[in-house]
Amino acid sequence: MSKRDDILLVDGYNMIGAWPVLEKLKEIDLEEARDKLLDMLADYQGYSGMTVYVVFDAHQVSGVGSTFRQHKLIIVYTKEKETADECIERLVHEMMNKRRNIYVATSDLVEQHVIFGQGALRLSARELLINIEQNRKQIQLTLREDKPGKRNSLDGHLSLDVRTKLERLRRGEK
Image (cartoon, rainbow, N blue to C red):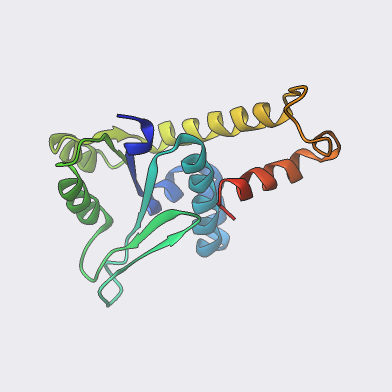
């Protein structure tokens, strides 16, 4: 079983409230904080190979909920009267019969105990942020490495920002 078989379920608003950069951004513009979270998780998914689901609470909004793809992430807005925790528990239950690791990223202690009891692995908001930051550093190191004979002749003339954008395009992320 490879990392490519693993699934990460993320409680979106829990991450926004727990990560300092997103918490500050949320105070100004919640939609911008959501977009930043999705960008960070798309990079993480591209590097880690895990399939990432991001669940957002919509329990106070009327409707049936929705699921769609963005940056190859699977975004889930819960249905009316369903919390993100309930949705994540349902998804864990649905996915557990397949042979793969399921990780749930939340700092909600009650939720951690419930999903752990169902066989999923927990990842706190802090642990996920550390993983994302470590992956970002590793990507930057990889992009900076000079591998003679393996690089395009233009590569040495491109800025790190441009190389990062091209790498994202190569992975099909933007």
